Amino acid sequence: MDEKKAAILGEIPRLRRYARSLLRNRESADDLVQDCLERALLRLESWQTGESPRRWLFTIMHHLFIDQMRKVNRRGEAAILPLDANEAQAVPAEQAENAASREIIDALQAISPDRRAALVMVAIEGFSYAEAANILGVPAGTLMSRIARGREELRSLLDDTARRRSIRIVEK
Image 1: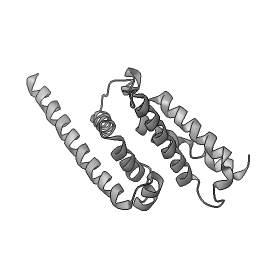
Image 2: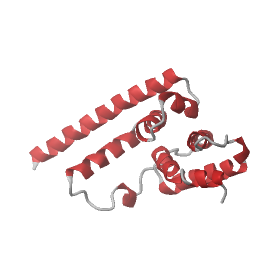
Image 3: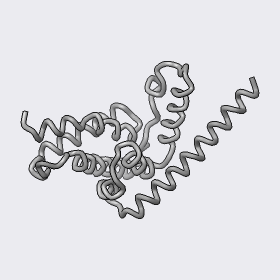
Image 4: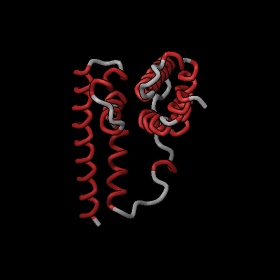
């Protein structure tokens, strides 16, 4: 296997994580990753050798996601599917960290897709603001605004969850 293809294959776990954060559905996310990899392999010559393919692949994936969302919106279909019951939580959380992680993931899934994409790119995938703005095709100021609003929305959702949890504990 040549060096370019090996570097692309090494990015698959990150691509899958990002696709799942965008789509919230395992099968749809895997389809998006496959479409991304197919397009990347067809356009392999457009990737600059010597650079990591990560930014290039994420840009391809984001453009495919936007195209998919536009098609869905034109057809009037539901754009984002809820998590399947078995994906939401396979085993009950026994530790506080597991419950807190689940709440954070659920809150992240509840915010708007553009804010979620911005947060995932910077906070989880580790792209700089400039790289993430380039990948998402938005000005840096727009990206920073989406991140700030997304963080605020997450804080609000997590505060509400904590309040509901404390109310349930008192009611028992």
